[in-house]
Image (cartoon, rainbow, N blue to C red; front, top):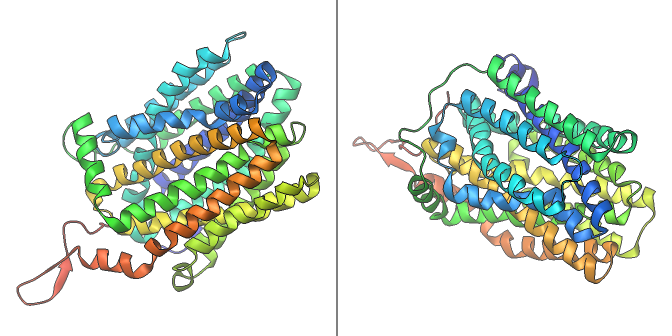
Length: 413
């Protein structure tokens, strides 16, 4: 499978694409509305950043307790239920006069559910397309994410201005319901990928197995930490330019779209192999320019260039899929998503705390510098030779001396 056209000939992939697009739109509108709402009530950059990205902390709890559900629940039912649950939780946040502290239990519950939901979604993507098609499929979902985020931030900003943040949150709840409808009507009934009931014990055993591999650990850390710190930088767009935060988020989504297309469709495989680390560097380096407190045109240009570096995530996910047994694909990708979102919450907290002590511009540059330092530390563990040794170790040898895929090799549907 080499083209987007081939992907969209598959009815279930189209449904999963629509589900992801609606979820992204809902989360974009809700995140911007919630950040503005909290900033207006508290005048605190830290609380505004945590309102937008702090719920990701709950992903850690979900990853430690319910993530085994990613491979042990029927995908269609799980994604439909997730859409309904997110709609209800987002609608609760829109209740007029709700104090900021009252949002905490709602956001925690939605974060825990989202941990399993991300694993279900990307595990199903891998099940539909196999190892060879996963990168292209993930890139196509990124194509949805980029324009939808651009439109979501633009529409979200307009809704906040024309209505209220609560009105924007209700719009996000409606979008979550649309995602549930796309999953229910477009996906066929499939059995779970793994036997047994979801449990805390099963989650912990599988997480320990995933974490036991040194190449996988390096990939996980590279997916989580540099990305999370840069999202912390993005969490300060509202304090940096309250009047133009939507524009900065929109051009960032455009840059991310460009990165996804380059990595997923344009660059050949032999050129992609060594680009993960350079793209992680690109993701953070332009934000150093915010130390000079640039005006809006320069700031938007820096954001657009930097976010092309999000393409590193596709390359690192491709490595993770190559290193993961098929029966753990949902949990492996769910652990990636949960850890990434949790680190985004950490990044938002770090950047917000720095902004409280200094300024938004200084905190953005400082957090980006930490991201670059982490990338430099992780770079030696991301060499392809280590990944190839891990893949070779997952082959068994027949009595006639020929190698064959072992039970850990990824299956194609």
